[in-house]
Image (cartoon, rainbow, N blue to C red; front, side, top):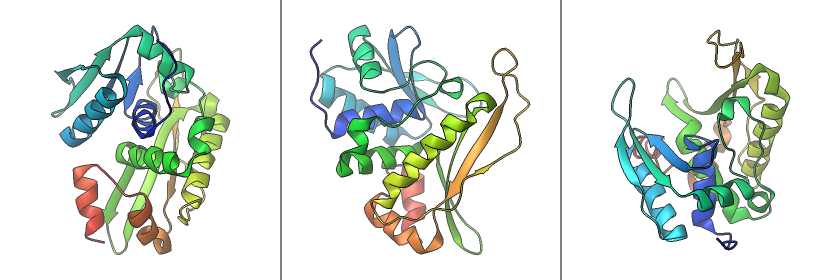
Length: 214
């Protein structure tokens, strides 16, 4: 497979695979797992527009209703790894935002929107709040903090200010060979909520509707 042009569809695919998606360790397939069918359709459309290939929608396992949109193609998987999509269990892997994304403001916008669709939370208490969080192996906290700082720097391009990053207590669940995880979180500052809404926002149906009420 020849090198593909870098574009918004490719940014979406890489961002989905970095967060709620998965690029197989053996590079046989990749997929997005979600309860939100609009996100699955967005992923399906991006994959088709970029690679002219269709995958398969599968019923997810576990609690509640969820689905996976899975694509089998080893050459595409190799290409995705080459341009910066992390493979295997991301909780146990070091990775960063690809340089080619960081260098383009519009690519940053697409990457961030997908990132917050997957890992962002929005709720209304006494004040509206938007939070971003992810779980990583304790051994990779330094890399994880560096990755979070990349996300914040990308948001800064859109005049979106963030709080300091905080870590949660360790998750006692054994992931692999005794590894435990910690959560890394930050919030969008209240004065930047409108800038976030205007410049980044959500595609996720529920989060988009909630954001519009702020």
